[in-house]
Image 1: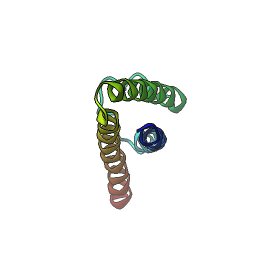
Image 2: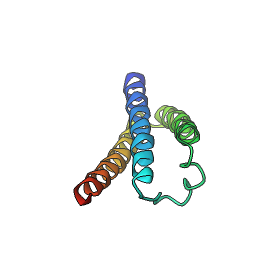
Image 3: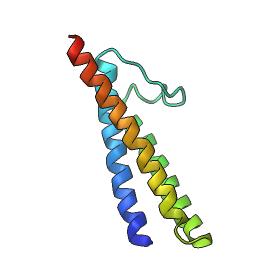
Image 4: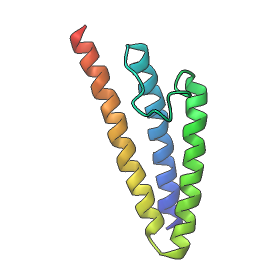
Amino acid sequence: MRSAIFSGMVLIGSLFLADVITTDAALRAGGYELNACMVPFVASPFIHLLVKWSVMVFIVIAAQWTDLKASGSGTLIMATVIGWYAVVVFHNLSLLTAIEIVR
């Protein structure tokens, strides 16, 4: 399970980076942040990335801890977060595509 959690960590880190990049591009194109908790952080991509990676550390620790309690549960946590952020990045890319089509 450790390798699954490590692979998940790499994938989540990549998705978080993609989220920061696409969110920044969407904001520059006139969009706005939908997550009210993130509004104070998205003005600075660096701070936004630090927040995302801090969350990632928490997720990995939680996944490892739960995996000790119930085998495979950490992998489920990671898969859920990966699925969610894949949707977030897809949404951002869709928004950017729509903005380009309108222009």
